[in-house]
Length: 240
Ligand SMILES: [Zn+2]
Image 1 (cartoon, rainbow, N blue to C red):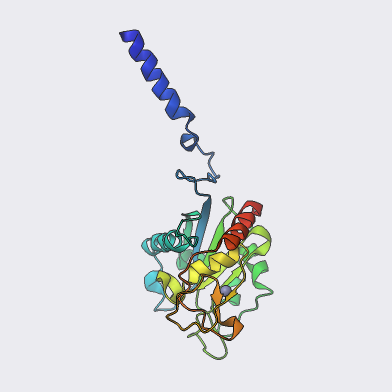
Image 2 (tube, rainbow, N blue to C red):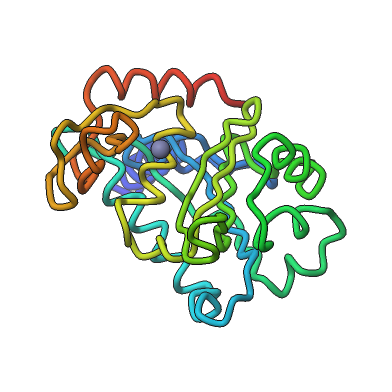
């Protein structure tokens, strides 16, 4: 009887130790597939603005919320989740303000940003990515000549496989046309799609845009099509 018990216990132990998800991950590396099989995208948030209204969002709890938003809305057209977005790092304004690099002079300033020089600044500020497939989201305060700091323009940069997003703080909390979800579409190679006659209340694809002049871009609440999904996965695999 004793012998049988030992054999049974041994077998159970073996089953659990050969389950790939339970394998230890070397420090400094992140497992690329989550327990439920979705590819992992580690997210680093950098809070770069100390504008008085934005400051209330500069906390760990909000960053957790932003991860939940990405996981909830970054879906295909059948509402299947695509990635497992994970909070990797959070750099609050206080920490960002102490970094010695010129990104501070390039964003949150009362002049339009230069999209040509920003990638170099980001690469100087963050020379080494600390996780495979990491995406950095800089929360900032957009400025334009027309709207001044009322501007909410957000942008994505693929930056040779070291992608990052500039997300206006007004678009946190899934506010204003799915900001983070839409930009994350650009990160993985997607272009805009036209949404003819869309009003601000029309359900549209996540990548819908007013660029085609005939629509507003709409709600951007419809998941990625099979063709878009293929582009996303191809780019994910290509990133280091
Ligand atoms: Zn866009």
